[in-house]
Length: 344
Image (cartoon, rainbow, N blue to C red):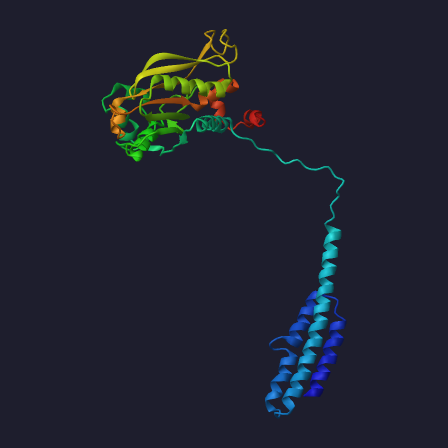
């Protein structure tokens, strides 16, 4: 058996030395060292050897295996180096070529305005609250002092999914949900951004889907002067330090008293121009003191607590801020339009 092993070694080394192809090398590895290889076949005869011969033959077999494995390993390393060298030659990169610029994205103007408004109010201590876009009639209307027969509902006639479910017409339901979740604790200081839906005909200034950001503050001894001071600070940060506000009496079912809020035209400084229609003022949002009924339905005693609320359309703010004259530009995916805001 020793002679067979020595002969096998000589034969294997001779054939392996001549190998010039990785596949042939692998075939020879299987031929000599595989489970059904020639070395294994020779070693199967060790069962017929005496106890004295087995250690000797075992040692010879290990030397034969080591010699074959060593030359196979050397050949494999040489083939790998050759392959790597070939790839380096074939995949050369000309470092003198000019670089290729990748397309740079940007934030959509609506998202940019939402982020800017959020940053302003977070800086004043507000938290951002969110809620479902599919709302119940109770949260969207009744809890906001709009019972089923209230005529103000006609202004928000919207998309009903069932008799009780609809696509929310405002983000005010988030305010009610937050009040109830607070279990009567104060202070409440939130803004509620999100999409809303109303049955409007699409034109330059209206859309069936748009974005709102509403705010709510509840605490002890909250007054209209607090609302005015908050909004005054907001418009100065949003439109510039010289911007002022004007409050005009209005009506909203969920606030009493209610006001429309105008800002001095930041384009003409209040002198009158095409943007403000020569009035010197631009209407941007509605606001007011939270109605006692809304406080009660939110879990607050109106004899003990008071609050103010406000709401603005994001598209309206963006159109004024960037001089956009058609709300539909925000939704048409026109890259020429969107790219204008990349560097802003």
